[in-house]
Image (cartoon, rainbow, N blue to C red; front, side):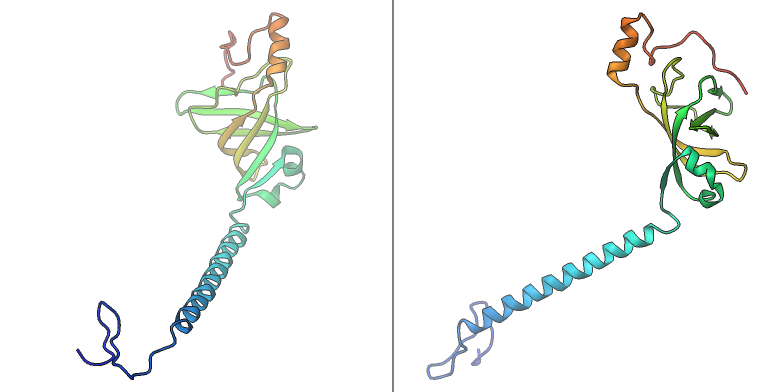
Length: 184
């Protein structure tokens, strides 16, 4: 092996040859690694910020109460929207074939008809007489002001409301009711 060649044991030097300063090389390598790490982190943060800002464009999911959506439906038409309101009592209608649920949600004096073309809704999605059932739907506002839902979320009445109702001898909202759902 010739003088200065690398080997598994490191470079060889002969007596009298000038040796590299032992501490200088590791300090420079450590500094370069730190700069590389900082540059990598800055690039990753920039990429993440770019994805977030890009995602907030057309694909953003707005979460608004029904009255705000209906005040300016054109602003939300064709965009993913999460609409929040209370179920209008007596408005739930279900069709078996093809499966579809229709109902109305409201906020204030504004009411929005919802169409949900799926077979299964959450267990908490029930019309409970004398109790407001909060409903959140995700989907799109249609040109006629109705809502085509891809997801239905119903808020469960609080356990305190449930306890008060049971103490008065009323049935739990999750229990099956004797009344049939209106058809459409």
